[in-house]
Image 1 (spheres, rainbow, N blue to C red):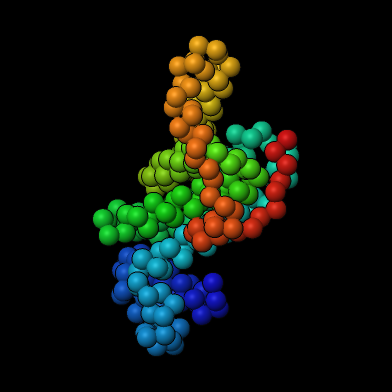
Image 2: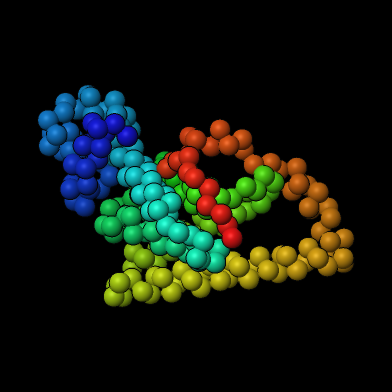
Length: 231
């Protein structure tokens, strides 16, 4: 983001709790910054929705930076994923801003933007944790994590427990469920009968390839992180 877009977004955050992610918030933010509205619209041409996406990308970047500063070697891999989702939620800071964004992206015109933003968050987490998958696992990992993240956001929005402890417990349960599924999938892959039964579907799925890494840089929040060792 440029200094100008950062300034507009910072100013907008004061208005979003009252006006939502809307043109009204953009107009008020531009006025607060002493920037004419036409200029503000060149930065955020779709108004509120572009402001909301910029806020989401900011949270993604903060999460990735915090992860990269951690010594992840001390954690099990499932704990690294839980930590990443927790850091992403903590990066949001203000639940009302997230609640307003959830409302916006539930609207049909912006549902695709919301889905793309969540997919971008999941992709950034996997990339930051050093994922190198190239086949259909690239898609299943991100789809599964996007579902976990989405459910954690909704739980967190309604959580009034001290320190959001109920959310972190919920997140652990969701990730444990995913890891159990992965263990079952791994066991089936080693079973000769199961391998034979799923040979057809696996052959179809094997045709799926991960997008070229260079093509992923347009995803919301995408960084070019270092690659921590998975251990």
